[in-house]
Image 1 (cartoon, rainbow, N blue to C red):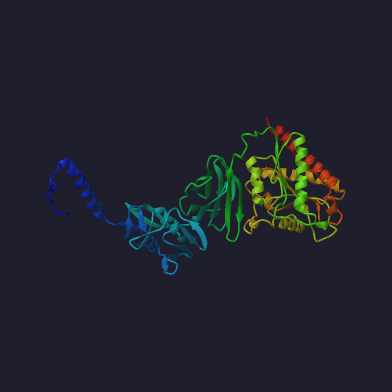
Image 2 (image 1 turned 180 degrees about the horizontal axis):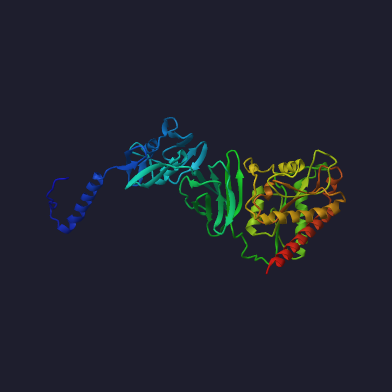
Length: 478
């Protein structure tokens, strides 16, 4: 208690009305100074007073109360907390942590205050979660630390790219199964989960919430899920978000079915090289343009993933088709094989597993331009199962007609994990129009008359497929 003091007006005069604000300010400063700079923290083992200021709390003391061993590396100015076989590293002044060797954003900064590493409660929760602890309560009234139980911890990181938002979920040993929902995408895990830290809305991600074993990613207005896929080493699940309204869409309203044609390769990626220096990227663009002309002639809308000799990342090709809500996606390529006698066309649709060693080799070659992480794609669950059946039908329509063009026995419709088909939300197929490695066929597919015949076959296949799909849809209606 502070002793009573007589307040005198300043020399030269002064009224009570001018003195009252000064009195209240003095009393406020005294009250703040008298406030206890600690928060009570209750753990299963003991209760302790931990340094705090406003909404900030001593992070190191919380970690030690949770049983973690905390070390300081003077050279790097960073701390390492270990517990339960897990390791968390962080540096005051930053908003990042390294959890078991993987970079993870924090919901706020870690600060130095009076020689202590402090952060708000959300930051504390993010550091404690990988070590198997949960924090509850509030800094002003009191906190509690409890073991997290059996729920697996899911860490979300958000990366903003030009025109896209990438959400990466990591942590659980088992990968989730994606399920489209009206608000965005639900990731369903095999067991109970919890978020390592609250999620801040960024880019196309509006919210992330957990209910039991399901993590729901809510997409912001004007955005949509364009692809979802797993990656390995380390294991994580990726969800890509893009604008739901493509540039120029308002000026170009849809009047009929839309087909996206993908000329394989382009730019620095030449693709296969045939006899006489024939380049796959040149052949595919020429054929794609011819197919587009034929489809437009019968009233279909067509977009190419590349209009010239430019580089387009594999995952952006299907993402374009998704954003445009295309009715079909066709990726055009030319084949190559160590067997010089191999010739004819091959048509593929997406599968996690290759149908045969030759299909696996074809997918490996066509996936080569992708980065090492993207090559870890093994699942395709975003599209409805019906699209797999429709994709198979589209592939059969193409293969049957190209067999006639080449005049050979059927090489068959095959399945393989092509990156360019991953995440397509419409019927999609990849066609190898012929073998550039074959001495004769390689020359033929580079000639305008052969390319015209191939384009006729591809366009006829797409039209037949769309008509069949339209008829099936009409027959299904009551």
